Length: 177
Image (tube, rainbow, N blue to C red; front, side, top):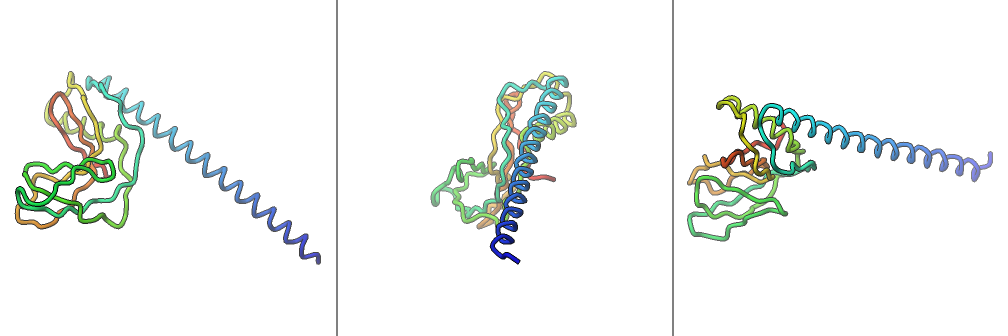
């Protein structure tokens, strides 16, 4: 048996297999982006038909974000961080200083902004008729809820979609439920 010829054949077969798998991966990623874009367009069309005006550009990208661990400080103590890697941090209801103490081990996929808008629409329907309301802003933030104990030394901020609807701010958890 000619080992150099066998080696060349094995290399050619492995190269062809890698090219096939790479092309298949690229095709699946492109298909997923197309499905996501179409789902976003369908969601926005539904919301417009239901009477909720979306007057802003809805982000199409999805990311993987970890939770943040915030070290809380008493009023006026320490430095306050306003964002983490370009994503704003919102601490509701208290005037606490805070700093980022670390992140969670795993970054999880966040839901698309269009899905967050549908979840918010369901919440608005429970509160009353959202027809005629208008989405004025949508932004991905880290949120520390207003029910934070004033005695806690550290707490967790999770990614959320901050959505401004007719002058009122709503938050939708950005992790899958």
